[in-house]
Image 1 (cartoon, rainbow, N blue to C red):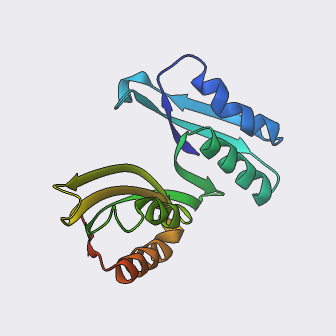
Image 2 (cartoon, one colour):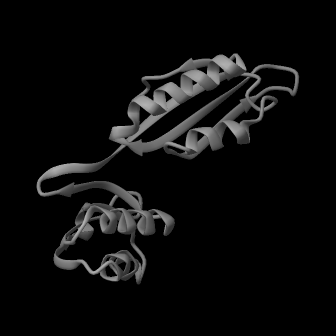
Amino acid sequence: MKIFLKDTPGSLIRAIEPISANNANIQSIIHSHKFKENDEIPVEIVFGIDDIKSVENVQNALLKEGLKISEINIEGKKYYKKRTKTIIMVGHVIDKDIRGTIDKINEGGLVYDLSVIMKSPDSVSACMLKIEYDEAQEGQINKTLNEICKEKEFLLISGLN
C-alpha cells in the first residue's frame, strides 16, 4: 500500500492502527523525508492480511482519517490506484446547486479542491474541480460528469491532466 502522510508527529501511528485493527501483519514500512512534497511524505506499507473485506476495512478507515492512498496492490496486482482529474464546468453552476453537484460526484470519487469564478449573480460562472477516484471507477466518474452537465446545461471541459 502506498499512502501520503502529513509530516506531523503521530501520523504514521494513525496510519498503521487500522492495519493492526484488521489483524494484518506488517512486514515493512518504508518512508523517507527526502521525498517530502507539499508537507507530505510518501510511505509504502507491506502487510499480510487474510481477506479482501479486511483490505476494504483498512482502506475505508484510512480514507475516513483523511489519509491519501495512492495505490493498493494485492499479490502484485493493482487493487486500488488513485487517479486525479481536473475539470471545468461552465454555466450557472452556483445557481444550479453546486453542493448537489459535488455530492453526486462524491458518490464515486472525491472532490478535493474547488475554485469558482463568478462576476455577478446573473452571469455565467465557472468552477474548476479536482477529483480523486479509484482507477476502476474512471468510466463511472466520466458518465456522472456527463450526466450532470447534460442535466444542468453546463459546458464540461475535461482532459486537463
